[in-house]
Image (tube, rainbow, N blue to C red; front, side, top):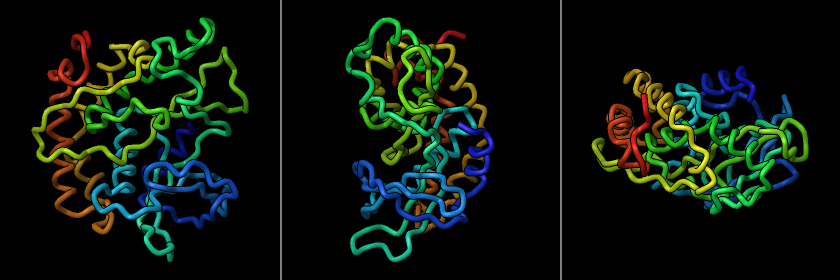
Length: 271
């Protein structure tokens, strides 16, 4: 991913550009959505949600997750909020845009057998994939912090390549998406849930990387977390929900290391 683009998109709350629907609709997913094209830059992004869902605040959570990912070096595609003008009846005007970062992207469930520890891959390509997954091991700490227990899904991580076609000897880059159902705790001290990590990912995890991410999360200033959450407009995220989410993020970041054995099986990462 382009570092400058990531910085620009985390600085921006809303897009200042105009966008139009892409010819290819894409897979709508649970919340509904479609691809959009930037009129000025020709960048492509995924717009979601289409459907109204007052219980999830999809767009707000996607934006919060991306902004937080910048602070702990987790591969989440850039996100900005997007207001849909005159959406069809029953559809939400409160959306977000998630940038398509590579010219070729594959859902990891379309490339690997996630339920298999070797991914259903030949040995020469299995090694490359495990290296790429090991490099993003910190994602399990990020997921635990946000309360994301839905990583064991073929549609919530992508493998990106700069050129079309999978190169079995190339690593590509894993990108983690779909944070709509995170940050649902009812109170700040809620216990961590055990993460549901696909066997292929679990087999490749590097505990040193996990510890590094836990350390980065714990070091994030409380005021920074509150500013990321509180800048979301109230129509996207109610003030009471902002308070609940901020309090939970602040409480949970301090408990990640000590509670590691609770939310992921095995021993805590070695120092």
